[in-house]
Image (cartoon, rainbow, N blue to C red; front, side):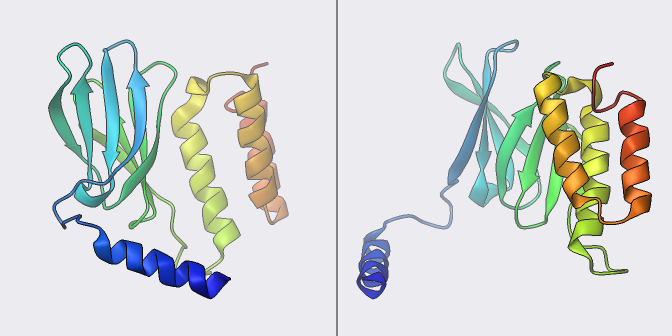
Length: 171
C-alpha cells in the first residue's frame, strides 16, 4: 500500500549517511569541444567542471540555489543552468564560467498569472538561444510550447512576429 511504501522510504532515509556538505550531483553535460564534463551540484549552488583528460575537477562555477537541468548551446558558447530554488536560468560563458545573464522564471508580481510570466520568460530564453537551437525540430517544439502559453491575442501576435523574423524557425 501507499502507507507501507512511505514508511519504508522514511526508514531507508534514516539510514542514509549523507551530510549537508555533500554536493548531490544532478545532471551531467558533455562539452566535446573542450573535453569537459559539466555537473550541476544541487546542494552547492555550483557547476563542477571536470577535465576529461585528467579526470580532475578544474573549476566550480557559481549558479543560484539548486542547479539541476543544463543544456549547452549548439555553438558551445553558453551553458544554460536551471536553478530550482530561485526559479531562474543562469547563462554561463562556457569558456570561463562567468555569468552572462540570469533569466527570471517566476511568477510576476503584477498579475500573478503563471501563463503570462512563463510566456514572457520563454520568449527571453528562446531569444537568448536564438539560432543556437540545434535543428528545425527543436525550434518547432519551442514555438509550439510558447504557443500553448500564449494566453491572449497580444502574446500570439508577439510570437508570430518573432517567428516571422526567424528567431524560432529557419526560413
